[in-house]
Image (cartoon, rainbow, N blue to C red; front, top):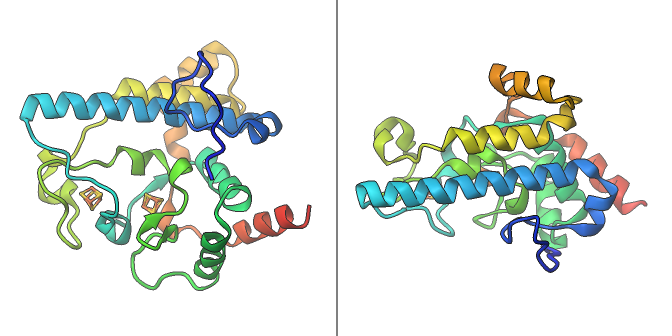
Length: 215
Ligand code: SF4
Ligand code: SF4
């Protein structure tokens, strides 16, 4: 469903693009720019880590224990807005139907609401925390949170990229002038807006889906 177009020279090739929606929703461009910065930072951090410790990255497709068991996943308001949009407007119809069911009857275990058929159903707009959680050496054992069991195997994101990504979305929070932006980054003000993805109720997303369907 990624409606990619030819790369624009000003944006990196790995940035997701949704030209029509981005024209209509200016915050979406900020969000996708921020995720491209995060993804670039992760690629650099992984490269550095592999060179330094010669440990292979363990994360791979269909490895989903983290999505099923981790309970503390921060998500920010700008990211939640992106998830609402994606679920309403871009998600594959069948996956969307399953997501509706999961919203109405949330999983009773610690599984992420968005984990559908062993895949992240919101992959292009998954939160920065999910993008940044990478593990080396060996895949997580069932129920293991390697942050606590083997911290040295967990990727440490490069802070400059995280700050740059936050900087890109500050207008979403009404922070637009340069001094305000610098102060917001320094004081980590956006960090105070974090919610826990797994304890949030997502019922309003159903409304967003209905609104889109009834347009
Ligand atoms: S964090 Fe662990 S469970 Fe998740 S993809 Fe990586 S190795 Fe697999
Ligand atoms: S949002 Fe996606 S990547 Fe993050 S925990 Fe949920 S299913 Fe996993």
